[in-house]
Structure formats: C-alpha cells, structure tokens
Image 1 (tube, rainbow over the protein chains, first blue to last red):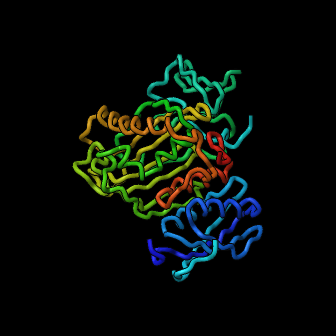
Image 2 (image 1 turned 180 degrees about the vertical axis):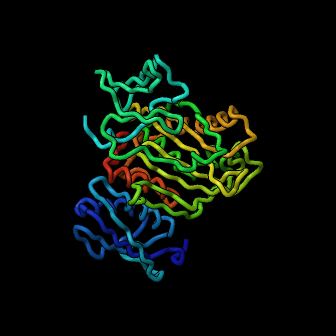
Image 3 (image 1 turned 45 degrees about the horizontal axis):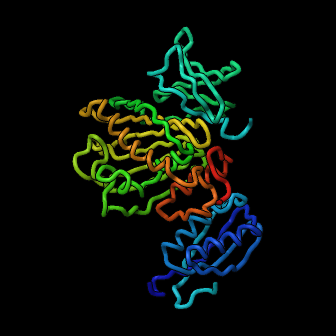
Length: 91
Length: 280
C-alpha cells in the first residue's frame, strides 16, 4: 500500500471522557491497528487527535472509539478529512 | 436483585403451546413458572408465588421481573391483513442472550454461515448503510442495508438484492424488515425474541409476519429453523462467551456499525446481563 492510499483525519471525540484511561486506550487500539496518532487537545469532555493510516483501519479506529472502554461514554465522534500527505503525524 | 434489565419485557412461552400444567423455566437466572389458570388466562409466577406482569403479543407470552417503564413495543406491519403469522418454536442456545441478538444483526456472516441461502461468495461486501439510536423511541435502527442473497426467503425464486432494516426495541429482541419477494412494496417481518435464562444460556423464539400464500407453514418454519440452527453452532463457540462492551479484544469494522450501535445502546442503559464489561 502506498502513502497515497492513506488517510489523515482529525477525530473530535465528545462525551463523558475519562481521559486518563481513554487516551492510553486509544493509543493501544491505534497501535494494534498499525495507525499513527497525534493528540491535539485533551480535556474532560473533548479529545482531538490526528489519525493517519489506511482508510479501512481508520474506520476501525472510529468504530472502536465510539464504543470505548466501559468507564467512558462517547456521545459523538466527528471526523474531518484533511489532505493526504506523504508524511503522517508522528506515532 | 435490582438491575436495569429486570424492568424489561421478555418472552417466556409460545401462547399456542401454553397449557394448564405450564412450563418451568428461568428468567435472568430466576426460576419462574408460566402456565394457564383454570380460566385459560396465561400467568407467570415466581418460586415464592408472586404473580408477575404479563402481556400476550406476537404469539408469545411476555413477562418482567420488575416494573417495565413502558408498554411492550408494537409492530404495526404485523396487523396488516393477509400476513401469515408464524410461531417458529424455541431453540435453546448455550450463549449469552446479547450474543444471540448481536449475531442476528450481523449481515457480514451470511455468505460464510448461510452459504447459498442468505449469502454467497463472491458477494461478500456489505455496502454502507445508516445506523442510529432513535431518541424518541429509544431504539436502535439500521436502515438502507442492501445485500445480495441467493434465496432470501422460502418464497424467493433465484438470487435478489435484498433490502433490510434492523430494529432493536428491547435488549434481547430484534426485528428484521426485509424485501418481501412476492410483494416488493411491502416488508417481511422476522423477529428474534430471546429469553435470557442465564448470562450464558438462552431460549430463542423466532417469530415471523410474512406475505406468502404459496409456501406451506411447515416449510416456512423449517426454513427459519435451518437458518437459526446454522447460527447456533457459531454462537455456541464464540469467545469470549459474553458480549464484550469494551472492544479491546475484538476489532469492529465499518460493516459492524449495527453491532457497535447495539453495544453503545446497551452500555448507555447499563443493560449488562450477559455482557463482558472489561476486555480480558
């Protein structure tokens, strides 16, 4: 798969986010899927992050985050595509 | 015992097969007895003689261990004249009741489990569809689902692209609306009513409301039983045995949107009987 097949999307996750457990959970789930992530902002009710990788796997991270760990309630996950680049965010 | 799922409705017997001597069974781990009283009225009692609330609907007797917050859901299509209402019977499955519902919602398994009936290779792709948790009715709905099926129903002749809608009105019940082969403007209605015996054992009561003047009732029942028996071997071997609400061990994909919405809805209501809360 080439770099052109990769997406770079911004996820904005809103809800009752226990970020001390959710952020490491997102990192683990993304790592399992082979995706690169870069957190932009983190607080109690919103987390913004860049996600970089193949489209189907970015979709899978979206599905996983919508459910999340039991301590977290995700009310909404907004996803915005940014232009594909040749170098994604750092892991 | 007090937990949110005790206040929901559950099927506990088929009305056409309920007699005076009744049926000893379990509901959420509690022993209950479903029977008809001397006047023929269906009743459900607990071990200590307490009478539980009951409703007779969709060919089945429904009850609750607690205080239901609303009436049992309705299926307006089931009242349309000309439909055949089919009590399929009961299938006991050694699986979480939530797993049984989730499997019913999963389209992607059709070509691999129900080969040459509800699906066939190479038609394995699940096209994008819409899923929502409807706030007004508090139900999960999946709409605009399309899938190629070699034999969508007993009444179907040859392969057709079938339209589907899925609905989850209760934690252990799902209603499927699918293209009606003899009447393309109408929906066939196929329901999965699941009685949770324990967290890892359930009785499944499929029920259907179909437009089909040709197929003998016995053949319709056999067709649906065949489908469900194919599912049973999969369900009884799934690990983890309980439905994970944390996707740590499983990796849901876009084709699993309905399952993800179902799990989110369970989680929001704390409907966790039969669920695994933390990935192990």
